Length: 286
Ligand SMILES: [Fe+2]
Image 1 (cartoon, rainbow, N blue to C red):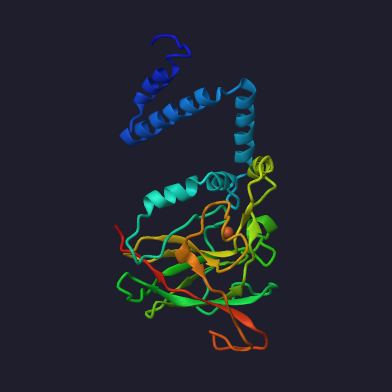
Image 2 (tube, rainbow, N blue to C red):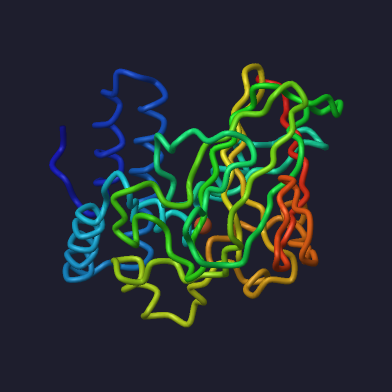
């Protein structure tokens, strides 16, 4: 192998990665080398900037845990998460669109019966999520699991609050009618976490660090594509400037204000409440 020079380094690195066992890994690594080398050459990266980047990445890694994923947040604000989502979910028309997973999903949420209150004991505006999980022909899907997570009334997620117990997250399973009815509270728009490395970076810009009010859904059913999506509150603040590019027209839902009285779970509410009516359409598994 010839010794490296500024001119031949990219070529040498590409050659080195020929040695990948998997053709797909080879393709990915060689493309990465090509683009990263191109980036370094384009911006004429200084030694100091390179070191700052290495420190930033190391700090970002240290912030990651099973409850917080700073790298996903970084990918989100770069628009990379939504690009990967778009490439991987060219869904048939009629299917509910997907959007970013975000950094706050936690595995193993508690399973709750339909109609249960996943915001038990928490303050906030009572909100009912009501609808049916269907296939593309409109047929209800039985046994669909809805894994739901959201922020509290102050816009904070479980991992940010350091809660020992599961907070504002649960899994519900549809019966033969495909229907779901869930009691929760309305989340507000919120700032993405600004106490980490992504926040440090955004503070050096005029980029808005807010997301519009939304509830996260991960819906799985045997024989169907898994759907990772949100429902966004119609007319909510920041709906036109989501920092992670997650909003899609079809995912904007009305959080309809209802007067005191009978709720979708059949209880009587003494105070007004919100109802979100939304049917999810899953596409068949590929
Ligand atoms: Fe969120």
